[in-house]
Image 1: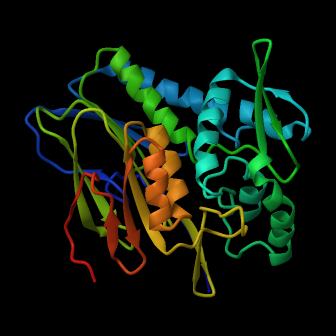
Image 2: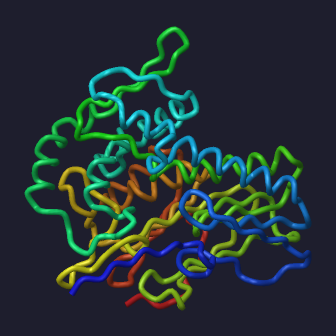
Length: 341
């Protein structure tokens, strides 16, 4: 039996990974628009119409610049260019890719920005979503060529003030899906601050960043059970400037012959990551780093993941296992509400 599921985490904020719990003294103003392939909700305390519009506009600009799906984007231009040759690259993308490469070097392949051809073969973002895995020989051929080159897949250089990128081989293509949304969330918060907003939350499909507080109280957020979205398993209270991003095997997946195939791919095998995690939430100072790390941790053991967190500036994480059990780093802000098996 084959079944495909594509859940927009932010369609209704309570659907999957995170939602705002009720209760405040001052009336929040919420708006929702489609950005970065998901529904984005911006909540401010009081009316800030111009600031909110500017924040949405900034997220839209980043999407137009960095989405591999848009033919006129700078990322698409890189992917259409010949491999093994230096190509001009927008400086904003250059800076983001450079930061992403720092995570990539530490993540042992579980975070990689060069997997566009592999992702395309799995067709998770296609108009007609997949119901079966790609042919095994197709995946094997990709892995055989790509695996020895993973560490050299993407090269950056600056020449006489010009930012440039080189993709080493045709099996690689640029995909910023595991970092660009977090970056866009950060930029939206910065735009709100620039317009004088002191208290807000930007929630892009359950991936979020807070600013200030909610009428003197922390922003209260719930993490849903990955297998039962009606159930809240963790209560989180964030105050000030914090980000939290969740990656899970329930966001884009299909079932084939009783096995779940999700969109978080391991470049060393060509298949979905399989460490037994169903959901990983990362808390960090920026949504960008939380976004990248939540993907990276999905392909690592808890021990290796904890090491990566320490090497990445002290971010915190919550791992939820397929059997419903959980582990978290000591600094993760959250109260577990349901019993462990």
